[in-house]
Length: 130
Image 1 (cartoon, one colour):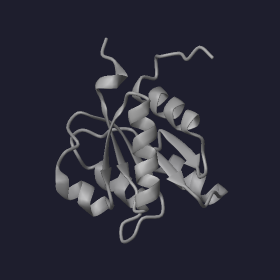
Image 2 (cartoon, rainbow, N blue to C red):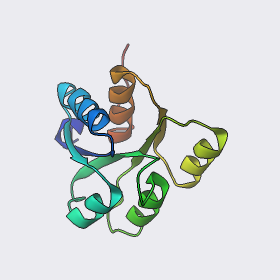
Image 3 (cartoon, rainbow, N blue to C red):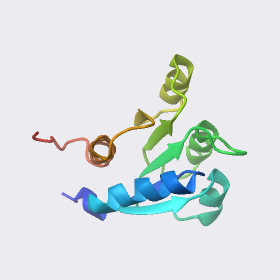
């Protein structure tokens, strides 16, 4: 059994204050986080080996979160993807489900909600005791 603490979570978010906040919440929760400012930068980095999950903002410049998920699907190792967005709609949720989202969070969300979602995605067999 491997612990979720060893996995890296990749954050793809073009808003620097949001990406810093997400990374800080994850690190405080004992989860290693790497931040990328765009889908293109992540794809060019070639560092998806050992990634536990990817948190992607739906509204990214140039290549949006759904397009990134499609590109990631062509790779050998596809980590689960958590979509985040400030623009919730039934269409966005349907698109997230169609894109194979592991989870969908609408901004603003609490740090507790983020950590619970990430931990569930990293280890679906774990059960949280409230």
